[in-house]
Image (cartoon, rainbow, N blue to C red; front, side, top):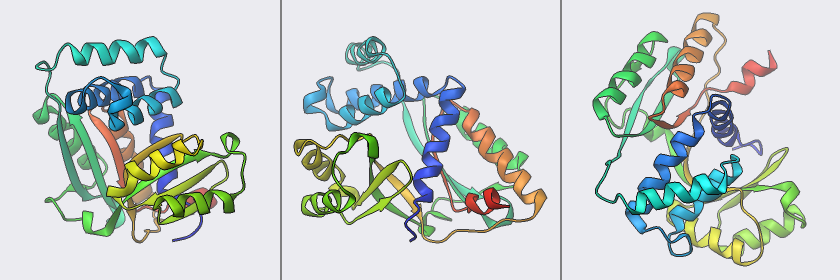
Amino acid sequence: MSGHSKFANIKHKKEKNDAAKGKIFTIIGREIAVAVKEGGPDVNNNFKLAQVVAKAKANNMPNDTIERGIKKAAGDMDGVNYVHNVYEGYGPAGVAIIVETLTDNPNRTAADVRAAFSKGNGNVGTPGCVSFMFDEKGQIVIDKEEYDGTADDLMMAALDAGAEDLKEEDEDYIILTAPDDLDPVTKALQDAGIKTESAEVTRIPQNYVDVTDPAALKGLHIILDKLDESDDVQNVYHNWDEDDEDED
């Protein structure tokens, strides 16, 4: 894999698009509810909740909104039950797409996901049809402006904590771990005074697909835009080499 972490860019683009549309707060609110239900409302003793709160702050969610969300979830443990589902399929030109959703209405969400694929001339497949093309990795993002040391210093700290690799982007350092090592590595870095922007398990394509056909590109944009419009969609991963389009 090259030093340019395309998978991180995909994630960032979605979050920026959602923020522009005012939807990221809804998505994070659901993540807070699930984290509280699974591990309780104490941020200091619930690592997953701590990471969601960090994500909320990175997206400029007001502290009082975060606190209200935690209190609401803590007082409504038997309330709305969000279901996590994963959809896999193909877009135009054989691009593999994975869609992770969190919803209180699975039937609605399934219909929305299928409609997005259909409108872009793609199709939803069976579970496992494309996930084998992706590797699950823990991904820790560190803003370069928030880190005073060198890349070599951070690499040594990350490897000592149990990380697998470090990639450098224009604005961020990306630390990769095995999925099960994400929490202990993140905690070790934070205990060492290193501020993390986000920490989560992500899916990294093993290979990327170049798409040059205008009709296929249009279809891909339709699918991804429609998925981004849904509050139920948490994450979208694909193996389309968007950089190739940007360079054209």
